[in-house]
Image (cartoon, rainbow, N blue to C red; front, top):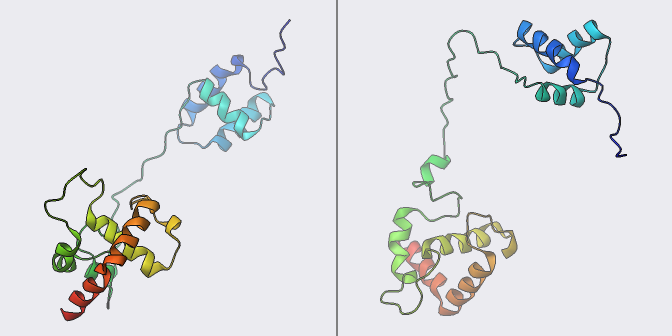
Length: 177
């Protein structure tokens, strides 16, 4: 004989009562429905047990709609240097990312023309932004955000570009601007 466990506190016979209470109070919370159920039956159940019984009875909570028209508050005018001044594209998610103007100045350093072999999986700009992120934040390579390529790929690219002196050339070009 299989074990069935404890009988549920709120049995299937109580589902019509739950449905009637939910239709009588369509915008009430689970706690309010539980209080009304307790007043009629004298049964007290844990909130999770009550929520499970409502789900098994097929009752879904409907949120009350806001009355009147909703007007969002006016945005405050900000002064000084804001993020809107620096970022130009959705691709530039971090302050360390290069702007379009900066990328046009240094793109020829990092883009290899007429390369042979397998095409790169990640754009050079994304790799450069990841390198700049690590340098600016001072974090470890493994702490790169998910938006960037895998840290191992970025680290190897950084080492290769550092050995070639590309970051010094990039710095000189951006300084001369």
